Length: 190
Image (cartoon, rainbow, N blue to C red; front, side, top):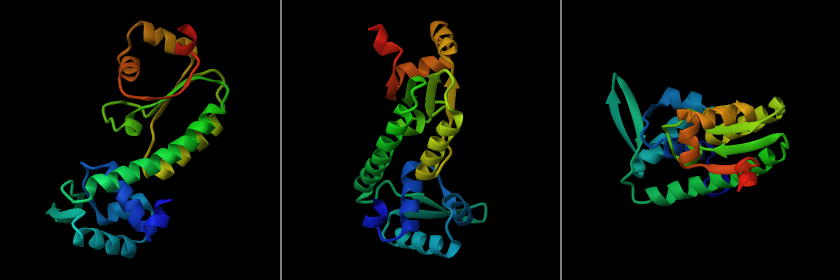
């Protein structure tokens, strides 16, 4: 969708990379590897984004770094557009996750709710979950987010035991911001 609005696939990948990681700084070769594009097109698009003020540059350790300029006039509008496009992708992925009938509970947290203090981005609870199907779904997400997605799979008994002992990992997920995809555990108890 964004490639249709923005004429360059490389530019879209760069916008996503910077807006989904607003505190991070990147150098050219690092970006080239991470977004899997040619160095010349990455350099050209970086210079375009610098020239309009979307990116700022600085030198550190004899390397030129790029970082998003949060004071850019259209920063919040472009950020909202990127996030909404990610939401459309998430909707398709959520449908794929819901089709895995073995899942009893699944939440999206971490990167999906712009929270960096969690150890996982997806928590899945269930028995005999088809791992290959789940891994394929995760690969799609990683491709669209241009970054690694951390996921955790627990059996229902392990999830219940860790919940009852107020395990910090589970407690932070249950009491923090999250997107509930499947809930056949808590919804049933109400």
